[in-house]
Length: 122
Image (cartoon, rainbow, N blue to C red; front, side, top):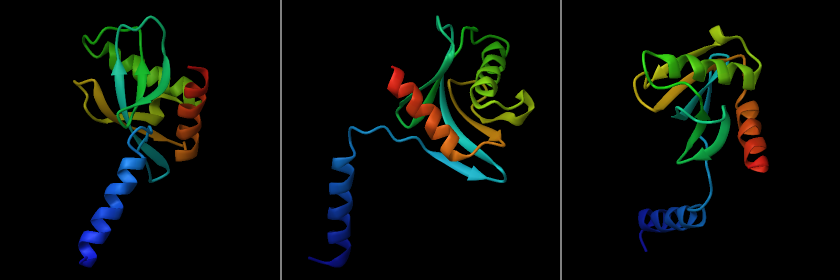
């Protein structure tokens, strides 16, 4: 078997093994992290987690009108990671439910712990 096909086969087997796992993509950059999130507006309870489709779910009470949900997302993330609201910015997806946020002063390990804690409770 040619070398490229063997590597592709091995890679396909790894993906098959990981098919049912939840993987959160977090990138450490410039003293903070970039995190892909999925926002659930008008939720009965606010909070962070679980991980769904490679994104950290963030539930907020606010409706997705006039930036209210974005403000609530920033507030919930600031409370969860114990940082100031000014340390959180929405990098992509300001008008959609799928967003990428930058959280300054937080490590990828802290984000992973928050996701794991939520999975353990939920």
